[in-house]
Amino acid sequence: MSDALRRRFAETVSRHFYISADQPHYAAQLAFALGRFDAGLSIAAHLQTPRGARVLDVGSGNGGVSFAFASAAGARAYTLDLAPNPELHALREIVPLRSTVGDGAALPFAGNRFDVVLLLDTIEHVEHPRAVAAEAMRVLRPGGVCVVTTPARLRYLFRRDPHFGVPGMAVLPNEAQRFLVDRVFRRRPAYDVTHLYWSADEILRLFPAAAKSEVLFNRTYRPPGKFTIEWIRHPRHAVEQLRYNVRRFFFDGVLVWK
Image (cartoon, rainbow, N blue to C red; front, side):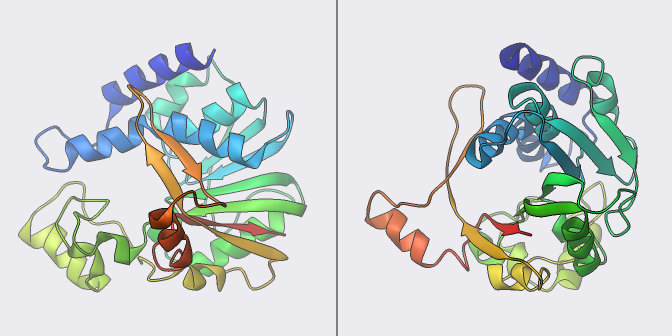
């Protein structure tokens, strides 16, 4: 099922992709979008998500992560985003998902409902991240976990920024980034990032009532046609140990438990 769904997912995403091929960041963003299914498989495996778990994907985009949770982990997956997504709609006939159009700062769900809440590459795009974090914790059941991934500014000091492909831009103030994207480089669609984080502590402060938390860094690699995330708890050599020691500034995300 996973291989067939991965192929169908890749075909659908490529057909409906929202960035035009003439944009310089097209290839990098398409690769990211195509990798969402395998990223979902990796996250579900890391969390050891039990069959039947309720999973809410806030800012679900093309739905790749949710499809992975539903198909491979047997989760009851729910997606929420500000607007309907054509890729997600096209694939729901294969893997049923419960999809809702709504705002992450005012989730239309009862409290203590979900085992997992996903905020994957979402928190940097929202106007009120503290409200989104509070809503994620409200709908989590006690003992449930919220997974937050977002680009760390310092990781892009000498690299192209993760959203628009402009070298070194991620360390600039957000309004300067907006000016460069919209006025100088004229990327399309327009700049839609509200805040990038310097440290994992900034993210954790959005969740003041968390029972516990863990800062993540991963060993990322690309087998042919796949994108896999492996979050590391036990570094296996000196370079990984160094990354582990500074992970609060070069993080890949955080886990926050209710």
